[in-house]
Length: 164
Ligand code: SME
Image 1: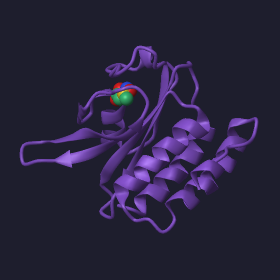
Image 2: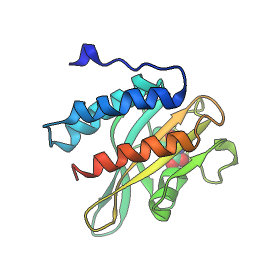
Image 3: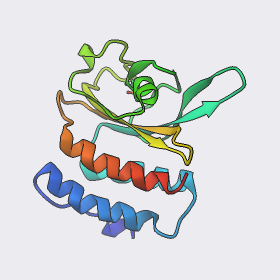
């Protein structure tokens, strides 16, 4: 199965159209959240050649809720992010996708790597419509993410929600 995972196409849209059905096939018949997220992070990282792709889980304790690092592919990253902080914390608070063309222009951006120049962050919701986790995708290029990424990555988030 792994060897047959090949993403084809020249444009970003063609690559996503090739990748997304393979992601669906990759997780078919498997219900374990961590196993599926781990494979999806690898599929996105190597299929789309992103710099960093990873999950932050919303973790609740009696004192507070915060984001905690989950399965990812790429350089080591920040472990915990507070509500409303950085792009990830903002997407959690706003409950919506955030596209950042230049991280230097996003007030409060958390730089896990100085190589990261642009990013897209998307929430996944649990059955109660609460944010359960965040997907963060980083690029070493400015303005790397647009409506096409939003459309196809939101499709991935809807798939992830089926495991929650
Ligand atoms: N840049 C993110 C933090 C996560 S790392 O980039 C992996 C943010 O501002 O929330």
